[in-house]
Length: 555
Image (tube, rainbow, N blue to C red; front, side, top):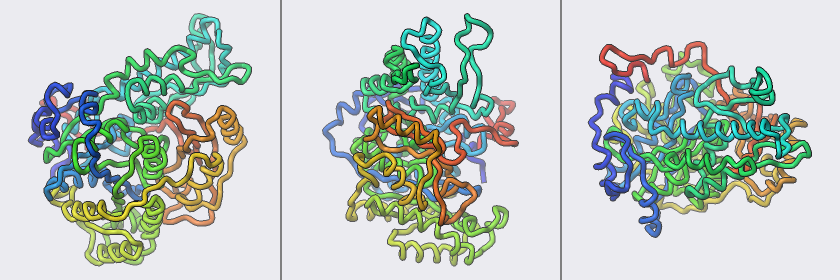
């Protein structure tokens, strides 16, 4: 079989104007970036604001394993499959970050015959959104340090800076640094930090803002520092939010691309779900809902992270309600959770499958707590046996979830028609969507609710640092905000080594920060970091240019 990039490079793409036209968007309502990418103008939403929304389908997954589950691949394949069965569908995804592309996780354009294209562009610079977010964030940081340097009229305490510089790359050397060395002209020396761009509050704000002016207001509300007297200093106080908005005025527009089968796809925003809220932009999703009868979107990592934040943060803020949830898993992931080593996953092992299926069961149970119909999608691999598939199907039925096998990786949309039919049926079922907790609930109870109901923890422990921070946020009036939990994606617990369905454990909140502009409190658990590092053998080793100028080694 061809590699992902070889399949993508052989794709027969349609001109982006043709893709737009299939959605009822005229050529003067898009801003093309070449022949196959475009920004969707604000005028589209204004024109369609009174049109009834289509059905919203969330695609999530079990906890990721080294074998890979293929959540994005299934999302794309499902969109193609919906069109195969005669339904008008569109896909709304996140943009990839360069960190995983050159690191170990990979990109976010799908795989096999279920990809969005142009894959190279999407996984690299795309339309420049990531660079704009990085620049806006770092402008804020530069203006903050400049405010201190130029007389410090705001009495900012350099020891209590709340915002970090960012870079869209995995670079552990920048996690903790000392800046402004070299004398008086270079500023006031202080400890500083970098996070990856997709973990920045500016990214979260871009994804949650309803329009350009909401974006400006949210940016202005970013808590950047405290004074020597303990008073909060906001981004608007250092007069940075206006210029930041100018840098982001194109980035806030959703990006239009297509799949290998020319199904329209909107890709916009890309916060990680293990360290941020893990969903694409509200503007992208709302635009998609006006353009098609079915919108397929995804949330990052497993349902304990991405789906919970999709429901409790994105849907709450945007007034959205999913019609159904697709939960992606694999035979291999369940055997891995059952104790089988990665190299042995190709062998049939019903005993390990049964043992590891508890992870799938936990995610089904969690999703049902939001009152939405659940369809389990088994992403099929060639070594899967019928006996294994039969067991999972029966297990899902016992758990009250619909079931379908998908072969989108190998067959594209054709391989997802069974899933598409199940999704259409699920969208017509009774739906009692609700968030997990009420915003009036005390902050500590919100955290406890997520930990107990979603992770299965016995309770939550707080470090002194975390408790002091949260108490400070409550005094600032943030007690009515939702909570964004930063946690390892590999386990339902905060310990990545605890597979399956961990029991008899507690969650430790090690630190907390206030994303005041985005509108939520971030709680960091365990040893989770907001700036990832590169592995011993990063993907960048294998990415290169051939003699014809073509990219090679990119998946």
